[in-house]
Amino acid sequence: MLLITGQKSIFNATTRSLHQAILKHCADKGKVEFIEVAGVANVLEEKVCSLLAAGVVDFVIVLLF
Image (cartoon, rainbow, N blue to C red; front, side, top):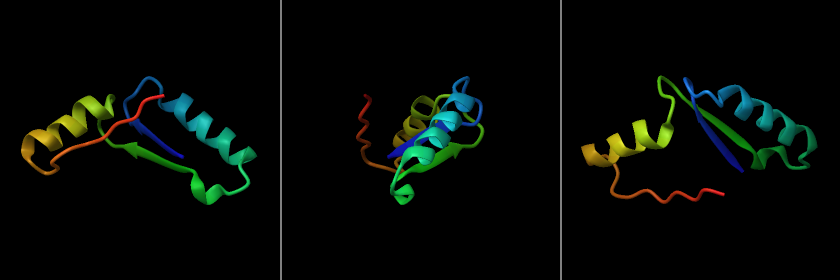
């Protein structure tokens, strides 16, 4: 499981808490990752779109549940 949040996101603390709760109950902690993107609130809007526009990446697949 990969959790991604922006450093300035209003849900940053919530995402961190979720990560800690998952780790607490997960048998294989190596399958749980947490990434905090520095300097942004909305990772998809502020980082992914700028990478696409700059030609750094060709495409991004996003699954939201």
